[in-house]
Image (cartoon, rainbow, N blue to C red; front, side, top):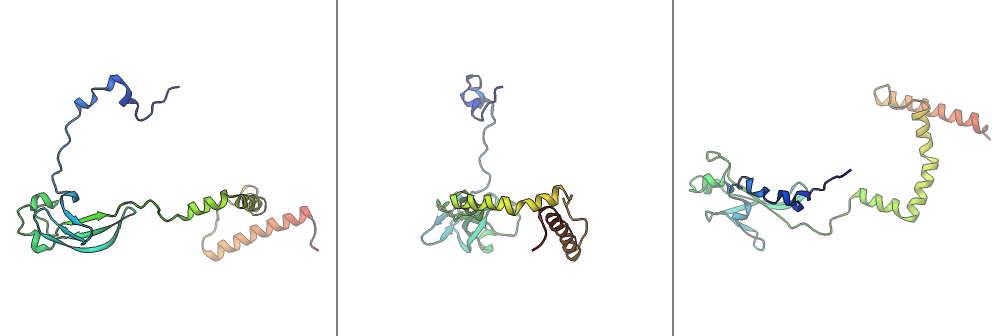
Length: 183
């Protein structure tokens, strides 16, 4: 079997002229954040028309990235001659907002999942986890596979708690019957 990678057509000479038939990329109709002048030292922003925007968010989080948000005053946007290129709709009442994101940090704080992976992957963690697999997991496997406790059939915390205790009681009685009496 042959499975092509995602760069296959870039290397294949049969597709060398494929770019000729693509429609030309249209120029952006609105001003982009790069069209605004941002001074990171002074924390100021100026729109393409030369009006100052005020800062109304120092640590705005969008899709996991932080940035600084600026908003134009209404008095600057209403009479502006570049209004059609700046706003989504020429007749909208809200002024333009722009966010400048901070550069991505190389050292981001480690997530709890990554910390757990490191913990389990070390020698001590593997030893502890293998012990857990032999002591903690078998009762849950027994309750699920042999006793059929895939899900609780009752609703409400008290009823579910009672059902759980009955299942574990049956499990413990079965262990006593197979492996010996108390004392």
